[in-house]
Image (cartoon, rainbow, N blue to C red; front, side, top):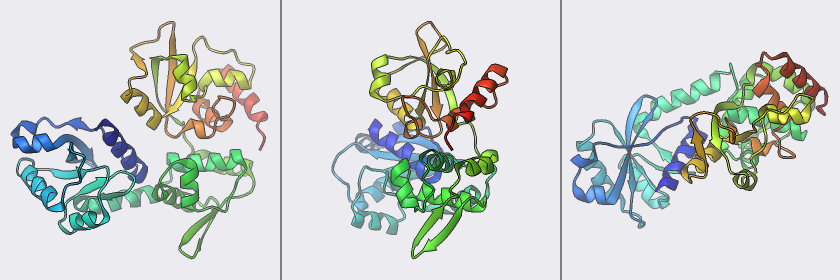
Length: 330
């Protein structure tokens, strides 16, 4: 159950860049006993719309008729929207659910929310038109191109496999680059193909205003070194900078992990979050994209590290960043 909910969260963020925090719905006691036996019910919010997520407890796939009846019973006890969540639904049953206008989601496969269709299209439009800052997927695409010296041509599907996003998310990344006039995008048949300038330093200079600090938040954790090694969690912050420059290493270790990996560690209860730093604490940075994809020698990449520290006012840090960037092989 927890794994399915986690997959749903990740799928929603990767496809439409909307974060949700499912919580147990407190109105479940109003429902018939048989519904409480068949489903778990979670409350989420998408674009200011409150939605109850029906997650079935049984392994067998239910018929669209049964799902529709249960959906209608729940709607009588809930004034908002309802969404059916399942690990898998056959193509035939998906078609039947759409015909009956029953909202559903199959993580990594399909999202059907007819009542929010207009709002979601507006959300997509805003993502495409707003280029004050690049989305995490667009930023990761650019940094990957610079670091790997791979400037294309490539398609959304190709980069989705490499960067662990969906093709839809990479399509929106292409949209952002096109709007910002970074690189050249052509249509070849039904494929969109992106080619970036074959000059990493030029890309870096022209995109500085669009790039942002990859760190979403930081937490103090009591971290087992074996877990840190097993999960290939790279060093970050001043810990990494001390390896790239002459600045002294901090007293505590700083590591970086993606939001998705962080959720997995928390769900699996492999880390203990501390209310404050103690002598054995590690500072864990939660990143907007996966630091592991660009890291080398167990340290985060030069460019992301620079973006995570460039607003630091300490002159020693700024000097160390300059030293590091002088060593970067463009």
